[in-house]
Image 1 (cartoon, rainbow, N blue to C red):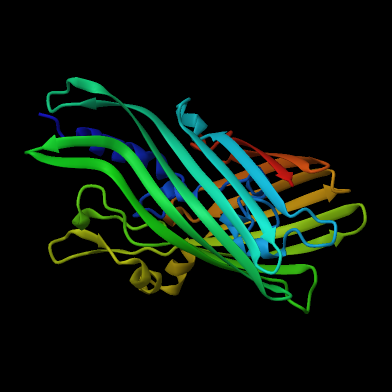
Image 2: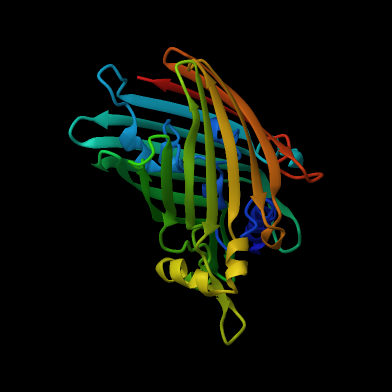
Length: 364
């Protein structure tokens, strides 16, 4: 008789591989937290207040409202990224892809579409005696539709609606009952981007992403919350001249999920709207601050042709202790732009160490 071993092993694998990445655990479909875009990846994983390229659908959909402006501006942009994920694990068939496209529509706003996909590779399915029953692939994806408009000349609003599908393992039978490591749900992102009137060099951004119902794999009692995330930050142009532009960016992130123990010592998660409030009640003010991750980075452009980037990511040791430097660059020729980024981890054998991202973008 087949057992749940395939599901358990797959879930365990995903959880283990995600611990260094998303130490604030307790959620599922954590691939939604993988930051796309080699450009932002080179700036310490920051971009909520920049959001001026094709990756804005992920970082801050409100940023789409300020794109493609001007009489001679192009009306759309498309971007692609492919990266081998967790290279230190030497899993050649584990990779992450991201693709996005947006288009400005006169008197309507800007619309966009994005795809996130992660492949966990091939797994072996066994029965209760350990006999191999065959192979299966595990993967997850999300399709996102985006819309943004200007509420005021300097204030943008954006919203995403996404469908999420998780395919961790095939259906198997246990005691005449079919169990599957598959699930699906939907989520919403809500974001704003503000360029204050008192400073033309400053921008402020906020994005609350993955607001949606829990995802069920085996049964509803074991449903897990989505990684609802609060991202806030700023961008500031330190230098902006005809030939040189230097921008400082900063992001702070925090997961808005909360798990608690019932009277039977069973771990359950609050529903998404309750968790967005209740998560702030656990621990002291100092404990709350420790739950934030911090990203800071800088980007230098010379004549809109060559870009150099660097950044730093910090997470408190109490929630995982991820800390790494990032470096990157970009080249823009006409309507095409190529970006790359590299992660230099300060911890030995860090699973993200030596991660290299490449992105290709084009205006149309």
